[in-house]
Amino acid sequence: MALGVVLVAGLTACSLIRDRIMTPDPPVKELQRESAIYYRDKWQPDVEKIRFTRDGGRPGLGATWCVNAVATVKGIDYQVIIGPSGGVGFVGDNGEPPEAPTPSPHLPLTVIYSDGTSEVIE
Image (cartoon, rainbow, N blue to C red; front, top):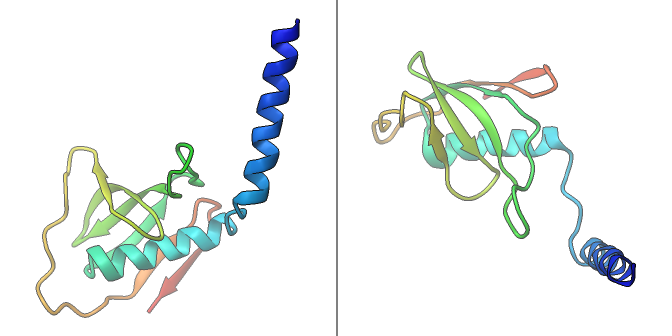
């Protein structure tokens, strides 16, 4: 019984301390938009569309925010894990999209958010 009380108290204290130290994440839609722009600007300027398949989140303590999405490049869909900063993970059978020619102009980017809304970013 005492061990249970100590465990609950410890977990509650960690949660309270974490809430004071870490600022909350911005809204999911804002993070998804930033992730789409980051992916286009830093990794794949030829991306035509990004469709987010989940809301996203932090997969572990201290991990950066990331989200699963489908990125369409030259008509081919690539499954990616992206965030507003940091690297990109490619999953699925299609692997990585081809490198864009340098310099490559930004195409209009259609973003479909996990809540079903969408926008075109020029």
